[in-house]
Length: 332
Ligand code: TYM
Image (cartoon, rainbow, N blue to C red; front, top):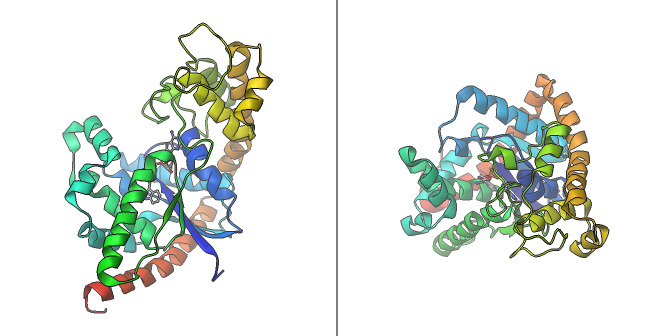
Protein backbone atom coordinates (compact mmCIF):
# COMPACT_ATOMS: atom_id res chain seq x y z
CA UNK A 1 0.00 0.00 0.00
CA UNK A 2 2.69 2.47 1.10
CA UNK A 3 4.79 2.23 -2.06
CA UNK A 4 1.97 2.02 -4.57
CA UNK A 5 1.69 4.80 -7.09
CA UNK A 6 -1.43 6.91 -6.83
CA UNK A 7 -4.14 7.52 -9.44
CA UNK A 8 -6.99 9.98 -9.18
CA UNK A 9 -9.80 11.22 -11.38
CA UNK A 10 -13.34 12.59 -11.29
CA UNK A 11 -16.41 13.14 -13.43
CA UNK A 12 -19.07 15.81 -13.09
CA UNK A 13 -22.53 14.39 -12.36
CA UNK A 14 -24.01 17.11 -14.55
CA UNK A 15 -25.45 14.56 -16.98
CA UNK A 16 -25.78 10.82 -17.39
CA UNK A 17 -22.50 9.01 -18.04
CA UNK A 18 -21.88 8.37 -21.72
CA UNK A 19 -19.60 6.32 -23.94
CA UNK A 20 -17.03 9.16 -24.09
CA UNK A 21 -16.72 9.18 -20.29
CA UNK A 22 -16.44 5.40 -20.30
CA UNK A 23 -13.85 4.96 -23.07
CA UNK A 24 -11.93 8.16 -22.33
CA UNK A 25 -11.79 7.73 -18.58
CA UNK A 26 -13.55 5.03 -16.49
CA UNK A 27 -12.49 2.02 -18.57
CA UNK A 28 -8.89 2.91 -17.82
CA UNK A 29 -9.49 3.29 -14.13
CA UNK A 30 -11.04 -0.08 -13.45
CA UNK A 31 -8.09 -2.14 -14.66
CA UNK A 32 -5.61 -0.44 -12.38
CA UNK A 33 -6.83 -1.09 -8.84
CA UNK A 34 -4.21 -3.72 -7.95
CA UNK A 35 -1.30 -1.74 -9.26
CA UNK A 36 -2.23 1.72 -7.91
CA UNK A 37 -3.76 3.37 -4.89
CA UNK A 38 -6.86 4.83 -6.58
CA UNK A 39 -9.20 7.73 -5.78
CA UNK A 40 -12.28 8.45 -7.90
CA UNK A 41 -14.97 10.94 -7.10
CA UNK A 42 -18.21 12.53 -8.22
CA UNK A 43 -17.23 16.15 -8.97
CA UNK A 44 -20.51 17.65 -7.72
CA UNK A 45 -18.90 20.97 -6.71
CA UNK A 46 -17.83 21.54 -10.30
CA UNK A 47 -21.34 21.03 -11.67
CA UNK A 48 -22.79 24.16 -10.04
CA UNK A 49 -20.66 26.39 -12.27
CA UNK A 50 -23.67 25.80 -14.54
CA UNK A 51 -27.20 25.90 -13.02
CA UNK A 52 -28.41 22.48 -11.92
CA UNK A 53 -31.76 21.16 -10.87
CA UNK A 54 -31.06 20.14 -7.21
CA UNK A 55 -33.12 16.92 -7.27
CA UNK A 56 -31.51 15.80 -10.53
CA UNK A 57 -28.02 16.57 -9.24
CA UNK A 58 -28.60 14.45 -6.13
CA UNK A 59 -30.03 11.56 -8.15
CA UNK A 60 -27.29 11.65 -10.76
CA UNK A 61 -24.53 11.77 -8.13
CA UNK A 62 -25.76 8.47 -6.66
CA UNK A 63 -26.39 6.95 -10.08
CA UNK A 64 -22.86 7.86 -11.06
CA UNK A 65 -21.50 6.08 -7.99
CA UNK A 66 -23.55 2.96 -8.85
CA UNK A 67 -22.22 3.13 -12.41
CA UNK A 68 -18.61 3.52 -11.25
CA UNK A 69 -18.97 0.32 -9.24
CA UNK A 70 -20.76 -1.43 -12.13
CA UNK A 71 -17.88 -0.46 -14.44
CA UNK A 72 -15.59 -2.48 -12.20
CA UNK A 73 -14.43 0.00 -9.56
CA UNK A 74 -14.52 -2.23 -6.50
CA UNK A 75 -15.04 0.00 -3.42
CA UNK A 76 -12.82 -2.36 -1.41
CA UNK A 77 -9.91 -1.60 -3.68
CA UNK A 78 -10.65 1.99 -4.77
CA UNK A 79 -11.56 5.03 -2.70
CA UNK A 80 -14.88 6.27 -4.13
CA UNK A 81 -16.32 9.48 -2.74
CA UNK A 82 -18.41 12.58 -3.33
CA UNK A 83 -16.29 15.72 -3.74
CA UNK A 84 -18.47 17.95 -1.51
CA UNK A 85 -18.10 15.44 1.35
CA UNK A 86 -14.41 16.27 1.65
CA UNK A 87 -14.18 19.97 2.61
CA UNK A 88 -10.43 20.03 1.94
CA UNK A 89 -11.27 20.39 -1.79
CA UNK A 90 -12.91 23.78 -1.22
CA UNK A 91 -10.17 24.78 1.24
CA UNK A 92 -7.21 23.97 -1.01
CA UNK A 93 -9.21 25.28 -3.97
CA UNK A 94 -9.21 28.74 -2.38
CA UNK A 95 -5.48 28.62 -1.70
CA UNK A 96 -4.68 27.57 -5.26
CA UNK A 97 -6.90 30.31 -6.66
CA UNK A 98 -4.29 32.66 -5.27
CA UNK A 99 -1.52 30.83 -7.16
CA UNK A 100 -3.31 30.65 -10.51
CA UNK A 101 -3.03 33.54 -12.93
CA UNK A 102 -5.90 35.37 -14.59
CA UNK A 103 -4.17 34.96 -17.97
CA UNK A 104 -3.84 31.19 -17.49
CA UNK A 105 -7.51 30.82 -16.63
CA UNK A 106 -8.52 32.97 -19.61
CA UNK A 107 -6.85 30.53 -21.97
CA UNK A 108 -8.80 27.45 -20.85
CA UNK A 109 -10.81 25.96 -23.71
CA UNK A 110 -13.52 24.62 -21.40
CA UNK A 111 -14.07 28.12 -19.98
CA UNK A 112 -14.32 29.59 -23.46
CA UNK A 113 -16.76 26.87 -24.61
CA UNK A 114 -18.96 27.01 -21.52
CA UNK A 115 -19.08 30.79 -21.34
CA UNK A 116 -20.15 30.84 -24.99
CA UNK A 117 -22.89 28.29 -24.21
CA UNK A 118 -24.12 29.98 -21.00
CA UNK A 119 -23.84 33.68 -21.82
CA UNK A 120 -26.34 34.63 -19.12
CA UNK A 121 -24.34 32.95 -16.34
CA UNK A 122 -20.60 33.52 -16.77
CA UNK A 123 -19.90 33.29 -13.05
CA UNK A 124 -16.65 33.42 -11.08
CA UNK A 125 -16.76 29.68 -10.42
CA UNK A 126 -16.80 28.90 -14.12
CA UNK A 127 -13.66 30.96 -14.51
CA UNK A 128 -11.73 29.63 -11.48
CA UNK A 129 -12.90 26.02 -11.98
CA UNK A 130 -9.37 24.82 -12.96
CA UNK A 131 -7.95 25.94 -9.58
CA UNK A 132 -10.53 23.72 -7.83
CA UNK A 133 -9.64 20.89 -10.20
CA UNK A 134 -5.95 21.40 -9.34
CA UNK A 135 -6.90 21.12 -5.65
CA UNK A 136 -8.88 17.91 -6.36
CA UNK A 137 -5.77 16.45 -7.86
CA UNK A 138 -3.00 17.74 -5.61
CA UNK A 139 -4.67 16.84 -2.30
CA UNK A 140 -3.98 13.17 -3.09
CA UNK A 141 -0.45 13.63 -4.51
CA UNK A 142 -1.22 11.36 -7.50
CA UNK A 143 1.34 10.13 -10.01
CA UNK A 144 -1.26 9.82 -12.76
CA UNK A 145 -4.55 11.50 -13.65
CA UNK A 146 -6.44 9.31 -16.15
CA UNK A 147 -8.63 11.60 -18.28
CA UNK A 148 -9.81 12.04 -21.86
CA UNK A 149 -8.02 14.39 -24.24
CA UNK A 150 -10.30 17.36 -23.45
CA UNK A 151 -9.10 17.54 -19.82
CA UNK A 152 -5.41 17.50 -20.66
CA UNK A 153 -5.22 21.30 -20.64
CA UNK A 154 -6.49 21.42 -17.05
CA UNK A 155 -3.93 18.85 -15.95
CA UNK A 156 -1.21 20.88 -17.69
CA UNK A 157 -2.36 23.96 -15.77
CA UNK A 158 -2.18 21.92 -12.56
CA UNK A 159 1.43 21.12 -13.44
CA UNK A 160 2.16 24.85 -13.83
CA UNK A 161 0.61 25.50 -10.42
CA UNK A 162 2.81 22.77 -8.88
CA UNK A 163 5.89 24.33 -10.39
CA UNK A 164 4.97 27.79 -9.14
CA UNK A 165 3.98 26.63 -5.64
CA UNK A 166 6.92 24.28 -5.14
CA UNK A 167 9.21 26.98 -6.51
CA UNK A 168 8.21 29.20 -3.57
CA UNK A 169 7.72 26.69 -0.75
CA UNK A 170 9.85 23.64 -1.62
CA UNK A 171 8.63 20.13 -2.40
CA UNK A 172 4.99 20.33 -1.31
CA UNK A 173 3.15 18.76 -4.25
CA UNK A 174 4.05 15.80 -6.39
CA UNK A 175 4.06 16.56 -10.12
CA UNK A 176 1.07 14.69 -11.68
CA UNK A 177 1.04 13.27 -15.22
CA UNK A 178 -2.05 13.16 -17.41
CA UNK A 179 -2.77 9.56 -18.44
CA UNK A 180 -4.60 9.52 -21.76
CA UNK A 181 -5.75 6.27 -23.43
CA UNK A 182 -4.58 5.36 -26.96
CA UNK A 183 -8.05 4.44 -28.23
CA UNK A 184 -11.09 6.33 -26.94
CA UNK A 185 -9.32 9.49 -25.71
CA UNK A 186 -11.62 11.62 -27.83
CA UNK A 187 -14.91 10.02 -28.77
CA UNK A 188 -16.80 12.24 -31.20
CA UNK A 189 -20.58 12.67 -31.46
CA UNK A 190 -22.23 10.09 -33.73
CA UNK A 191 -24.12 12.85 -35.54
CA UNK A 192 -21.35 15.47 -35.19
CA UNK A 193 -18.00 13.80 -35.92
CA UNK A 194 -16.31 17.21 -35.74
CA UNK A 195 -17.18 17.77 -32.06
CA UNK A 196 -16.75 15.55 -29.01
CA UNK A 197 -19.53 13.27 -27.82
CA UNK A 198 -21.41 15.11 -25.13
CA UNK A 199 -24.79 15.01 -23.43
CA UNK A 200 -25.68 18.36 -25.03
CA UNK A 201 -26.29 16.57 -28.36
CA UNK A 202 -28.27 13.53 -27.14
CA UNK A 203 -29.02 12.03 -30.56
CA UNK A 204 -25.29 11.53 -31.14
CA UNK A 205 -24.49 10.52 -27.56
CA UNK A 206 -24.65 6.94 -26.26
CA UNK A 207 -25.46 6.78 -22.55
CA UNK A 208 -24.23 3.89 -20.41
CA UNK A 209 -27.73 3.15 -19.10
CA UNK A 210 -29.44 3.30 -22.47
CA UNK A 211 -31.53 0.39 -23.80
CA UNK A 212 -29.78 -1.81 -26.42
CA UNK A 213 -32.33 -0.98 -29.12
CA UNK A 214 -31.81 2.75 -28.60
CA UNK A 215 -28.04 2.32 -28.80
CA UNK A 216 -28.39 0.32 -32.01
CA UNK A 217 -30.65 2.97 -33.53
CA UNK A 218 -28.09 5.70 -32.77
CA UNK A 219 -25.29 3.70 -34.40
CA UNK A 220 -27.39 2.95 -37.48
CA UNK A 221 -28.01 6.69 -37.87
CA UNK A 222 -24.37 7.63 -37.26
CA UNK A 223 -22.93 9.97 -39.85
CA UNK A 224 -20.28 8.31 -42.00
CA UNK A 225 -19.07 10.48 -44.91
CA UNK A 226 -20.24 12.54 -47.74
CA UNK A 227 -18.01 10.63 -50.19
CA UNK A 228 -19.39 7.74 -52.16
CA UNK A 229 -16.57 5.34 -51.37
CA UNK A 230 -18.57 3.31 -48.83
CA UNK A 231 -15.39 1.67 -47.61
CA UNK A 232 -14.22 1.20 -44.01
CA UNK A 233 -10.83 2.89 -44.06
CA UNK A 234 -9.09 4.94 -41.34
CA UNK A 235 -8.76 8.49 -42.67
CA UNK A 236 -9.65 11.01 -39.94
CA UNK A 237 -9.06 14.01 -42.25
CA UNK A 238 -11.45 12.99 -45.00
CA UNK A 239 -13.65 10.43 -43.22
CA UNK A 240 -14.04 11.69 -39.62
CA UNK A 241 -17.32 9.84 -39.01
CA UNK A 242 -15.86 6.49 -40.08
CA UNK A 243 -12.65 7.19 -38.13
CA UNK A 244 -14.73 7.87 -35.01
CA UNK A 245 -16.66 4.60 -35.40
CA UNK A 246 -13.38 2.74 -35.95
CA UNK A 247 -11.95 4.38 -32.86
CA UNK A 248 -14.97 3.27 -30.80
CA UNK A 249 -14.85 -0.25 -32.25
CA UNK A 250 -11.12 -0.45 -31.57
CA UNK A 251 -11.57 0.75 -27.97
CA UNK A 252 -14.30 -1.80 -27.19
CA UNK A 253 -12.84 -4.82 -29.02
CA UNK A 254 -9.10 -4.13 -28.71
CA UNK A 255 -8.72 -4.61 -32.51
CA UNK A 256 -6.28 -2.44 -34.46
CA UNK A 257 -7.41 -0.21 -37.34
CA UNK A 258 -5.81 -2.60 -39.87
CA UNK A 259 -7.69 -5.54 -38.38
CA UNK A 260 -10.94 -3.58 -38.58
CA UNK A 261 -10.31 -2.59 -42.22
CA UNK A 262 -9.70 -6.26 -43.05
CA UNK A 263 -12.75 -7.45 -41.13
CA UNK A 264 -15.07 -5.14 -43.11
CA UNK A 265 -13.27 -5.20 -46.46
CA UNK A 266 -15.84 -5.03 -49.27
CA UNK A 267 -18.79 -4.81 -46.85
CA UNK A 268 -19.60 -1.10 -46.69
CA UNK A 269 -21.10 0.99 -43.90
CA UNK A 270 -24.40 -0.91 -43.91
CA UNK A 271 -22.65 -3.85 -42.19
CA UNK A 272 -20.09 -1.83 -40.26
CA UNK A 273 -22.39 0.53 -38.32
CA UNK A 274 -24.61 -2.16 -36.73
CA UNK A 275 -21.49 -4.22 -35.93
CA UNK A 276 -20.07 -1.30 -33.93
CA UNK A 277 -23.49 -0.91 -32.28
CA UNK A 278 -23.53 -4.62 -31.33
CA UNK A 279 -20.05 -4.47 -29.86
CA UNK A 280 -20.95 -1.43 -27.75
CA UNK A 281 -24.25 -2.97 -26.62
CA UNK A 282 -22.43 -6.10 -25.43
CA UNK A 283 -19.86 -4.08 -23.47
CA UNK A 284 -22.53 -1.91 -21.84
CA UNK A 285 -25.13 -4.63 -21.13
CA UNK A 286 -23.52 -6.06 -17.95
CA UNK A 287 -22.69 -2.54 -16.74
CA UNK A 288 -26.31 -1.44 -17.10
CA UNK A 289 -27.68 -4.51 -15.36
CA UNK A 290 -25.21 -4.32 -12.50
CA UNK A 291 -25.74 -0.55 -12.02
CA UNK A 292 -29.51 -1.07 -11.76
CA UNK A 293 -28.99 -3.77 -9.15
CA UNK A 294 -26.58 -1.61 -7.09
CA UNK A 295 -28.76 1.50 -7.34
CA UNK A 296 -31.63 -0.35 -5.70
CA UNK A 297 -29.46 -0.86 -2.58
CA UNK A 298 -29.37 2.65 -1.12
CA UNK A 299 -27.86 1.49 2.20
CA UNK A 300 -24.91 -0.06 0.39
CA UNK A 301 -24.29 3.10 -1.65
CA UNK A 302 -24.41 5.21 1.49
CA UNK A 303 -21.87 2.93 3.17
CA UNK A 304 -19.55 3.19 0.14
CA UNK A 305 -19.61 6.98 -0.08
CA UNK A 306 -19.37 7.48 3.69
CA UNK A 307 -16.34 5.21 4.04
CA UNK A 308 -14.87 6.69 0.86
CA UNK A 309 -15.15 10.24 2.23
CA UNK A 310 -13.48 9.15 5.49
CA UNK A 311 -10.51 7.62 3.68
CA UNK A 312 -10.24 10.54 1.28
CA UNK A 313 -10.48 13.12 4.09
CA UNK A 314 -7.63 11.50 5.95
CA UNK A 315 -5.26 11.72 2.96
CA UNK A 316 -6.50 15.16 1.84
CA UNK A 317 -6.20 16.54 5.39
CA UNK A 318 -2.52 15.63 5.54
CA UNK A 319 -1.77 17.60 2.37
CA UNK A 320 -3.92 20.55 3.44
CA UNK A 321 -2.14 20.82 6.81
CA UNK A 322 1.21 20.79 5.07
CA UNK A 323 0.08 23.57 2.69
CA UNK A 324 -1.42 25.71 5.46
CA UNK A 325 1.80 25.45 7.43
CA UNK A 326 3.95 26.39 4.45
CA UNK A 327 1.92 29.46 3.58
CA UNK A 328 1.87 30.70 7.18
CA UNK A 329 -1.58 29.89 8.58
CA UNK A 330 -1.60 29.25 12.35
CA UNK A 331 -2.19 25.54 13.10
CA UNK A 332 -5.69 24.67 14.35
P1 TYM B 1 -16.07 15.69 -17.42
O1 TYM B 1 -17.03 15.44 -16.32
O2 TYM B 1 -16.47 16.62 -18.52
O3 TYM B 1 -15.66 14.32 -18.11
C1 TYM B 1 -15.24 13.21 -17.33
C2 TYM B 1 -14.19 12.40 -18.04
O4 TYM B 1 -14.66 11.91 -19.30
C3 TYM B 1 -13.78 12.31 -20.34
N1 TYM B 1 -14.59 12.61 -21.54
C4 TYM B 1 -14.33 12.11 -22.75
N2 TYM B 1 -13.36 11.28 -23.19
C5 TYM B 1 -13.39 10.94 -24.49
N3 TYM B 1 -14.32 11.39 -25.37
C6 TYM B 1 -15.31 12.22 -24.98
N4 TYM B 1 -16.23 12.64 -25.85
C7 TYM B 1 -15.34 12.64 -23.61
N5 TYM B 1 -16.16 13.43 -22.89
C8 TYM B 1 -15.69 13.41 -21.62
C9 TYM B 1 -13.10 13.57 -19.81
O5 TYM B 1 -11.87 13.81 -20.46
C10 TYM B 1 -12.92 13.22 -18.36
O6 TYM B 1 -11.78 12.43 -18.14
N6 TYM B 1 -13.06 18.79 -15.01
C11 TYM B 1 -13.39 17.41 -15.21
C12 TYM B 1 -13.83 16.70 -13.95
C13 TYM B 1 -12.82 16.81 -12.85
C14 TYM B 1 -11.58 16.11 -12.76
C15 TYM B 1 -11.00 16.55 -11.55
C16 TYM B 1 -10.94 15.17 -13.56
C17 TYM B 1 -12.95 17.60 -11.76
N7 TYM B 1 -11.84 17.46 -10.97
C18 TYM B 1 -9.75 16.08 -11.13
C19 TYM B 1 -9.69 14.70 -13.13
C20 TYM B 1 -9.10 15.14 -11.94
C21 TYM B 1 -14.53 17.35 -16.22
O7 TYM B 1 -15.27 18.30 -16.41
O8 TYM B 1 -14.69 16.15 -16.82
